[in-house]
Amino acid sequence: IELKNGEVVKPNFGNGDVLIFMIGDGFKQWINPSLGVSFRATPHAMRMPKEASTRTWYGRMFLPPKNAFLVPQAQTFRELQADIGTSRHAGTACSDGLVISERSLQGCDAETEIYCWTQCRSALSCASDESTQCVRSLTGSEFVVCDPDIHDSRCAPTCIPNPDNETASSTGDLGNGFCNGFALSMYMAGFTGVGDPSEQCLIFLFPSAVLDSGLKYVFASFASILLGVLVEVTVYFRRKTTALADGREKKVKLILLYSAQVTLGYLAMLVAMTYSILLFFMIILGLTLGHSLLNLGATVTDHKDPCCGGVVEMDSKGK
Image (cartoon, rainbow, N blue to C red; front, side):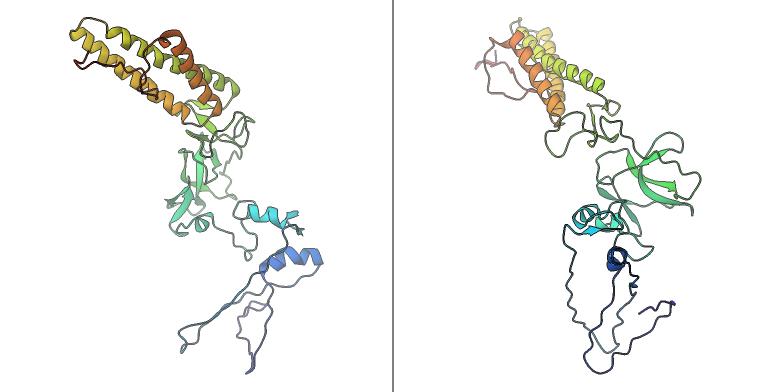
C-alpha cells in the first residue's frame, strides 16, 4: 500500500486470518464531505508470489441508495449514475487526477483510438500542447466539441489546443433554441417532431440544406409537397405518352419520363425516411394532391411505392 507520505510498503498480516478495511475513492468523494471527516483512500496493489500461478478473489460492491443525496455533486445517486462517463462527471469515483475515458467505455484502444461519431477512430499525432478530440471545426480556430454518440459526419478526430492553451477557442454550444446545432440525415429513434432544442438538426436531402429554423422547415415542407405532386405528374404524362403512335420519339419520351419518375419517387422516399413526422405527412399530402388532380380515374395497379406507382399495364402484345 502507499502511505500518506508516498512511501510504498508491504503490510505484515502475521500468520492468522486478517480482515482489512480500506477506504475507496468513492467514499472519499461522496461520504467524507457529508460526514465532515477526511478518511484517506488507500492506493494499493496485489503482487502475486513467484511460486503462485492462480489467485482466488471474491468481491461484492455495495452502492448508495438511488435516492441518496451526494453533497459534492448536488444530486441524487440515480442522477449521478446517469451522468457517469460524461464530461460533467468524467472523474467521479476515479483516483485523483484520473478520469473515465470515453474511448475505454466504448471498447476503443485508449492509446491509439478515440471514440467519435459512434465509432472508434484513429487518434492523431498532435503537438505537445494539443490533444485529439472529437470536434466539429468551424471558422478559423473556432470549434465545438461533439457528443461522440451523435450522428454528424462533420465531427472528426482533430488536434485542438489543450484547455490551458491560450489559442483554444471552443464555441461551446451551437444550439439556437430550435435544434442543437449538429446535423443528421435520419432520426434514429423513430418519428420526431419539430423544434426540440435537444434534437439534432435535420438535413433535407443535401448537406447544405440543414433545417435549423422554423422558416427552413416551411420551405422544406412546400418542397416535399411539390415533390409528391411531381411524382404523380410524371405518372400522368407517362400514361398520356403511351397513347401516342409507336416510334422512336415515343420510346425516348417514355424512357425519360420513367427515369424522372424513379428519381422523384426515390427522393420522396428519402424524405419520408428521415423520420420527420412533418415531412412524412407533407410527402403523403403531395402524392395525394397530385393523384387527386391528375390520376384519380386511372387504372389501379399493384404498385404501391412512389418510385414505381402508376406503371401502365401492358397487354400480351406489349401495348
